[in-house]
Every structure is written in C-alpha cells, then in structure tokens.
Length: 307
Image (cartoon, rainbow, N blue to C red):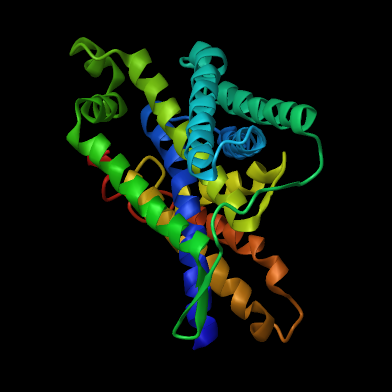
C-alpha cells in the first residue's frame, strides 16, 4: 500500500508538469491545427535561462527571495519572446501552406533550438541550485518533499488561471472565436495575427515554468531535456483530446499516473526482467493505444463542438 501511494504522489507531480507543457501544444493546435514540435525545446530554454539568470543574480549578491522570482520572470519573458519569434518567422509564412510544410518546419526549429542551446550552454549537465529546504513529509508511509508540493499546487493554480483567461476574458473569447472559425472571427473585428501570437506567447510562458519545475525537482538542466518531455506532453495532449484545454490537463495527470504506476510495478509483473528505467515506454504505448482506439482523445470528441 505504501508503494501504491508513493507512486500515485509521484505520478500526480510528474503529471502536473506534463499538463502544463501539453497546454502549449493544445492551445496552438486548437487555433492553427499545427503540432508545434519545437515546444519541448522552449521548455528547455526556459530552464536554462532561469538557471543562468539565477546564478548571475546570486553571484551579484542578490538575496534568494528576490533572485528566484526575478529569474522566473526573466525566463518567462525570454520564452515568450522566443515563442513570438517562432510563430512570426517560422510558422506565419506557412499558415496557408499544406500541413506537411509547417510540420517539417516545427521539427527543424526543434533541431535548431537544441543546437543553439548546446552552443550556448554546452553539452554537460548543469546542477540546478536548491531553491528551498527540501524537507520530506510522510503521508501514510509515502514521502513527498517541499518542492513536489509546490510544483503540484503551483501547476494547479496556473491551470485554473489559464482556464479563467480562456473562458472569462475578452482575450479568451477572441481565442475561442479564432479556434472556431478564423475567417468569421476576422469579419467580427478580431485581429487574427495578434491572437495567434499571444497564444504562442502564453504557451511559451507556461513552458518556461514547466522547465523550471522539472529542473528544480531533479536538480539538473541540460540542452536535451526538452525532447522526451515534449514527446510525453504531446502524448498527454493526444490522450486528453488535442485542442481541448481540459483534455490536456486530464491527459497530463493520467499519463503521469500511468508512467509512475507502471515504473513501480513493472518489475514485479515481469519477474524482474524489466525495471523502472523502462517507464518512458508507457507513454508511447499510451500514444499508440489512443491513436488506434480513440484518435479524438478522451474529451476531444465530446467537446469538439465547443472548442
């Protein structure tokens, strides 16, 4: 029972990060019908920017209480500018091109960002500073630390805030109108280019926060960290119903639980033949299963008319 509870806690924490990244995928897809495969690299850039700015601020003698929020803001602003640039330079000229062209472009942007990060920060792993006292807490025999608690609560708060923006603000109405019908929204006075750019910037800001969460949780940041995380977040978006915000949140949490429970019990189920290091396999099994049995995702079909 202790193992089950521990894996559930680990899965919810990891799943909340997947959900944040998946929201970036699903917002862009909902408006443009585009899979932005460079989104995982934006997560990585956010982590590396936060690490660099935090190291610099602490080196200049800035107190941690000021350096931490400042580095988070700088990372978010940097990623939002990057997201705007990606949309403006790479995707906007291809908006009316065949679907294959922006897909190939997204893969190309991903490779470019990886190599730029490698040139700037190097190939080595960078230790992410411990931001708060990582005190463990015992809950029914399972252990959860302060960083994991903050990650989970902050992720839920950010997701709730995003839902409020999308469903309760003028910007959110414009985003939903563009997602429903771009030409009709334009006739009603909606600035299509502005809405799409803001969508990319919002998703990139969430990606920066997710990157900081991952690095703070594992204590590492490196140039390749966004690749697998991005694929898993894409799987989470497909699982929940890509293009649907609630689906992305649900898919992220479910994928985190599936991965964690699979890693915890795969050794027992296979007699020790497979270990917890095979946990990444579960994400791709889930992706294949969803594409075969329910391509629209768990919530995609039911909410398609209201997306």
